[in-house]
Image 1 (cartoon, rainbow, N blue to C red):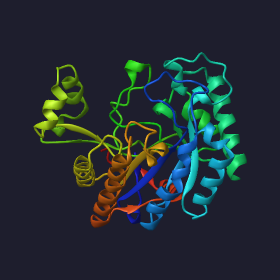
Image 2: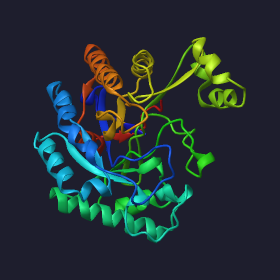
Image 3: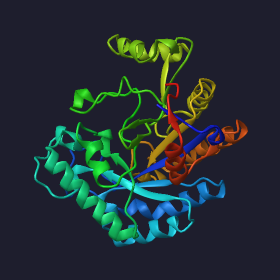
Image 4: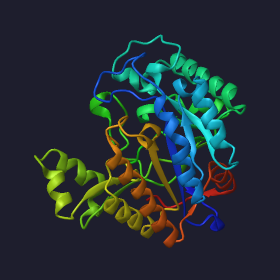
Length: 324
């Protein structure tokens, strides 16, 4: 576990899964996508910039190879504090040596040589587009595998954020993060910053084990959530009510988490491209969610951390931080 320096304080960061738009209800396809939602990103960036919040854009291959998307992101990165990282969607990222199926949508399931080739293709595309080699990585669909961190370290990556704390994707062929907490930790030279997920409610001490047991009971999780006993809340505006998010922040800070990791998908900044923002009313709620959460963080004295600040602080820290 990373024991953050004392002067790091309690911080938060925002990662943006900067990706193509596609039909979330349809089978994944190599050609069935677009990049038009990227046009709404400058307005979203300005909203965060007005609050002094830098964003880390985790860019995938369709975005990194689209001229308009590159120009928009270059303008956003001109603020000098936002950063670009890598997000691997293997089904739209060459080389296309693998069969197109759900299991292979998790890059970590691919043969090591195939995963490595896809990482190389995407890393080179981002370096060409933005003039700098990325040092932060996220596997699309959180599809990290047994070779991923070693492959990233060998290519100069410093930080991974592919683990979604307390979630499992086993039923779809993906990884199980049920045993992963929220505290940042090291694996060799790599810094792992899981996406923050908090159990809230009077029975939150039961954690992942209780939440999984409730999943085997018809309507068990819903009943416990409505009774205020146990909810699982990820720090994202996507399908997470603001009231629940504010409670999750309070729990995380109260339990001593030093770095809160927020995330959202870039197509959610425009109506009609994700299940979370289907119309103008949803978009207003999306922005209102961030207004409420960012104001709450400021009230609590939780400051933002850029990607560079996180890596620098982790480099100067020791180990032995308390897991949360």
